[in-house]
Structure formats: structure tokens, C-alpha cells
Length: 336
Image (cartoon, one colour):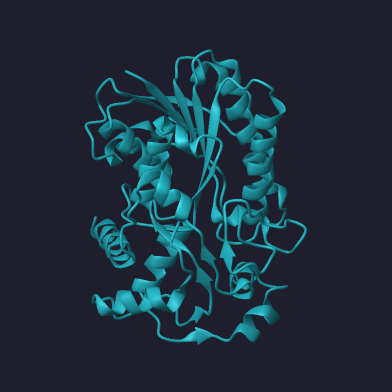
């Protein structure tokens, strides 16, 4: 059976990818920065992950050790691991350096392997939709990192550009690559880890921790759809060397999310906006406001998912189901 190396195995998207891979019959090797988390990750998976189909290895985005050994017996590589912080870091390099170096380590490991046929790289709409005012973002669009777009957006853009340069610099690359571009990823949590951006946002909304919301738009997607398209990309050669937009075709105002929550019984979800002028005036002095300002000032935009639907016959899970499934999983975690 074919084996897939999945980096960042403890993460929100990666754990769903592992489930999807096991369901599809693949053997999986998941990378962890700390091997002490192996039992925790195994327990979070819905599959019987104690069996021989799942193994773990230690990898660090900032360390060469172990990458070639991890990839040598794998047929495919899903590079999902990438750093993220809710607030703007003190230095952009805190996010950019591991994102860039980790991507290049993954690609070099694939190149040095005699088996890897394809790499699927988790990029983001962050690498497509910022630093410009295009109302419909397409796969050929790129974020302009010369603008004030924030460290996370820069990290995803710079890392992906380096990946494509790596692929194009090889006259006869031994493997193909697909990049997956989700918007804000919601959906059910498999573990008790609520540190991700969407989990933290939704948790605060349903528990009344936000008195008001920024007047911000972003495209959204269910984590189960993201995982499905990662796995389907492995054997679908129509996706080879393409950027696959994996998100809603229209931008969603964050108040629409709050309204769905309230309609489904989460009455503490906020009903008011934070004035945009206040966000922009506080942004130079407050890290959280600086992150909000980037979203607010971008305004509404859509995404062209025509090619994604054509290649994968994709039918996205509804926003309401996505949000309610995530909210219910958060509620179960709080009960535990």
C-alpha cells in the first residue's frame, strides 16, 4: 500500500487529512515536533490509529535532522505544518523563517527520495487575496508582500513562491506539486486543542467573550473539504502543478457567522460591530487590533473556484453545517 508523509500531524487540518488518508486505504507517517504528543494525536483520530497503518516521526521546520529519513519510503508528501499566531509577532521572521525553511526542507526531502511522486502543499488564500483590491481572486493572483499585509500573510506567500521556484528550477523534477488554498478553516475539532484561529474565534463568539466584532469579510471552508481535496489531489493528475482554491466563492461577513450561531441557540454571539475607525487608530499600538485592521481594510472579495469544481467535482459543505459542527465539538470539549 502507498504511504504518505504528513507534516504537522497534530494540527487541525493535518489530523483531518490523516483520517481521510486512512479512510482511503493509505499508510500514513505523521511528523511531530514533540514525540511526546504521539498518544494524544492517536487518541484524537476517529480511526483505529493503533494499527500498523499509522506511524510517527520527529521533524522540526527549523532543523535538517530527519527529513530525508522520513520521506525515503513514502510515495507522497503532504506538507501542512506552518506556524501561526493570533496576534502579530514582534518580528515577522518568527513566522516567515520556519514557513519558508520548512517548505524547502520538505521539497528537498521529496527530491532526495527515490519514491515521492507528488507533494501537496497547504498554502492559503492569504497568498492570493491581500495587498491588492481585486474583487474576484483567481489562482493566478498573488498577494503583494510589499504592502502592510501582516506577518502570517507574508509567511504563506513567501513560502509558496519559494516552493514554485524550487519546482520550476528543476528541468526534470522527479515529482509534481499541487498547492491548496483554503480561506478561514472551520469545522469539527478532533482534539481538545482550541489554539487555532477559527477555534479561538468561534469559542469566544459562542461564550460571549466578544462584546462586538470587526466589520470584516473572509472566505471560509470546512476542514473536511480541505482534507478531502488534499487527499484527492494525490492521484488526480489534473491538479498537477496547479494552485487549487479551496474556499467559499463569496466573502462572508463575520456578523453572518454570528447570526447563524444565534439562530442555532448560541445567544451569546455578538450583535454589534467595533467601529472601523477605532480599529485603525489602535492598530499601531495593539497587536490584536493590527491583525483585525488587515482584514477590515481588505473589504469583501470573492474567489474563483471554477477550476476546483471542474477538477474535483467539488460540492462544498454548507456554512451552517460547518459552524454548528464546530460549535458542538467545542461544547463537547468544554464538557470534558
